Amino acid sequence: MSEATPGRAAGTSRSRRGGATIEQVARAAGVSRQTVSNTLNFPERVRPDTLARVHAAIEELGYRPDESARALRTGERRTFAYLAPVDDPHDPNPLMGGFLEALVDAAGAEGYRVLLFRPPPGTTDPRSAVDDLIAARQVDGFVIADVLADDVRVRHLAQAGVPFVSFGRTGADEPQNWVDIDNAAAMGTVAAHLAERGHRRVGYLGPAETGPTAGTPATARTAPAEGAAELPWLTARRRGLSDAATALGLELTTALATVAPVDAARALLSGRRRATALVAASDLLALAAYEAVWAEGLTVGRDVAVVGFHDLPFGRVLQPPLSSVRLPLRGIASALVRGLLAQVRGGEPSGGVLLPAELLIRASSGG
Image (cartoon, rainbow, N blue to C red; front, side, top):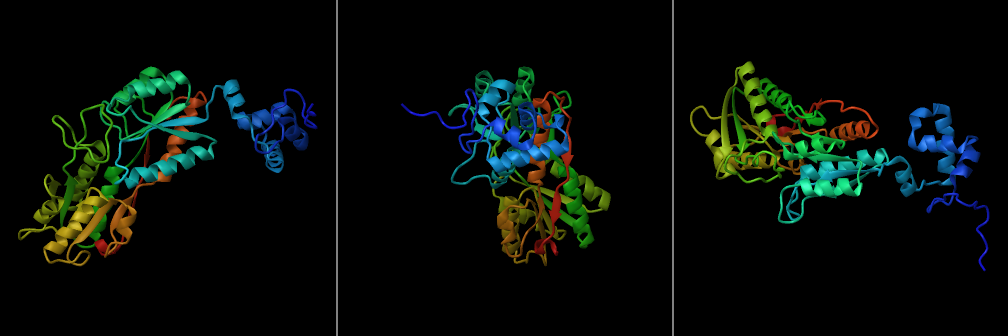
């Protein structure tokens, strides 16, 4: 017959990792068991000096709470669901990969995990996959990205009455639980930078890609579709640059990469009034701008300035290094998690959060 484990009282929860009980933490900190529970679940109810003592005892004893018991008691699963966009594993979207990294870190800092999901293979409608997670009570809330006008995901989550936030602005008559960057202001900064460098003729190189029909989740490489509209963030970038160019007295010409991006960029560099600066809607299009400049026998950074958007890692090793707009991915992720937690804990949606992006000036634009 086996002996009972010394010091283990009936019904006492022990950490699988550290072996300490909540009662031992309470004794070490000189507080009640309820105070330890409040420290873990409702820290706003505990005085700062008491919080410090309890956390010190938890760290010293290696206590880890039983998450399944906590979920039964509080109803929280400590998990957020992220509707992952479709991507090619052999050619992944580095921007959304960086966003996911930031989101996992931001959730982890609050004691939450991120569960990735998407519709079943062969389908694009995410509603059944969302409903499955809601019915199974597996997550506390949802994060969506690539938000379009009249997005079916926004409508469905709002109707389901579950906490959610979106990376990208929702419509005026939809819930305002979003975080976005100020694309227009970022392009205004780009225009001002080029004007300061003496450029008066600017070319904008945009993608031929457009968004899917309203409500279908976008991907990084969405093909044009009949009845499709320009992706909202691209609209904001184009209009922001146009408005800033007008205000600064710049001559702006736009070309869309409908066939070959390099050819579209070369068209901006032709004629007597060719552009002396090219602004690309993304860093990938900035690569086409480089090739077009070289094909015209010109030099990037000396004859033609080039500016991208997203600040992907490859741009820093180009020759010359690419000036580009960097998205505050960690700031976006932190704001999304804060907004989602506020709803999970019974608060109201805080509205939209607009964050600034940063122009990093390098040699491609004469920096």
